[in-house]
Length: 631
Image 1 (cartoon, one colour):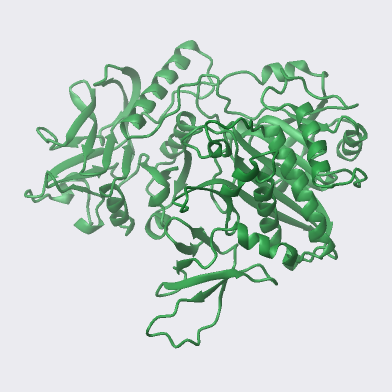
Image 2 (cartoon, rainbow, N blue to C red):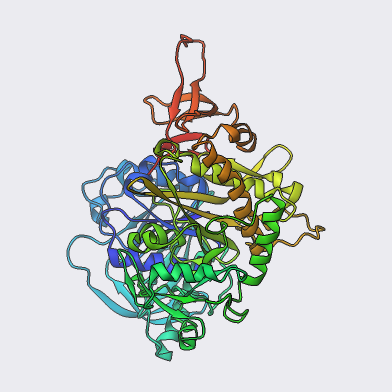
């Protein structure tokens, strides 16, 4: 589920930035925190996957059709949180002068307001008027008994008309003034906080007083979110909010792999400065202080990403691998053993040139994004031999399709695979099939005994690049458990392909994962090492066929259509005006487009042809049965 943070033109950027970092700190790994624009609020079907909509500190809202959609979301059971804001309460019998509460120039239909039918009342959130925002430092007292001093508060955070309201609960005070309220609707909930509880005093200070203050602030944020019905993870002061060093490793039986990689990367072990990152290298055992320093803690919120440089790479030469103390979340010895076993099961030969998929890899406990490491650092990537894998136990800024964020806490298998091939072997027009092929490889790997066996039949494909778990005899419960992102970089007559994948393997609820597909009595033990090894071997076996057919997807088409969720599915195409009902028939074999045909009605001429949709221009809202423009 998503927690969406409004990022429209009225938003105060300091509040937006700190709202995002604070929410991610306290909600990871249970929820994905993403921004949503004014346009997307008005035009995209965001509400189905939204656990909470948050408005950070804003100036007076501008007119937008999104207010009607927000009202409908909350009145149908959604949750809304406004920070650094105030509110005015009004009964329907009372005529409210909008100008009097700082909402000028708007009609009632353009005003953000919430209506409770049971009490015939309205709540109007109010925001900062124009001009300079003047704040003062105050002491905040919650009705639960918690207190916090030095909280920022502005005079705009006023609550009007709430005295005696039956469906208003006061949550906090500043002196004798109301500082926060909860407004109960028949189904939904609105919470408004006037003080800037999203604003930290510092993100880096090690001063015990400031660290204690930050912990208290985050504790209050957890209370706010629980009050809104969110499943907040237990407090964990050991969470890491910055990238850790990466180990460059290889199959211990082939120590020459690391030597070959370092020969082209940096013989002098000097730094590589690239577009997105700067890479520093050192040998395993050559800088133990680097690993010790990486265990330092922050105040509990994500620091500024600009402080995440340089990126350190620890080179494991001569077949050496990190110890279990240096790599506690991923056992590299077990991984290479499982890779050997998986390759044997899939009939792969040992004479792969220059080496097999998965035999050379970067591994880190925490990275920003495995995908960004490859596709945003062109100099670094162009020097790397291929194939090479980048694997992490946790990502701080995992990327999904378009502007989506992929939540990737511990328990989620997150990796990117760099491949390089000639356009004579794989024509550019066939690159669209790479995402389909890799998705199919993951689904087929899940059906192997090394992962889920027959239970892997519950793992299915959603066009164009998602992995879903289907639970129930009639496919009544569908949840996303993974996604695929493919980037391509053209260099002369060659193409570099970066395949990124996130797959929930061991995550506990509320995140759906492969582990939850196992019955309680099952003796099968999933492991991250065996899962990624099986995926690598399965994909390599399919990739060799794919290249031998010059990128033709025909050898895999029948199997793909058996594994996806959409055969003969009736959906609404919202990219036409008016929206049109179409039925999915398959994928075009030439360009990998989603093929649909208009649904015949009593008024249809019967002469309408195919409507083919590009995966890069459309996205599939499976819960709503909509195909819409990608944002």
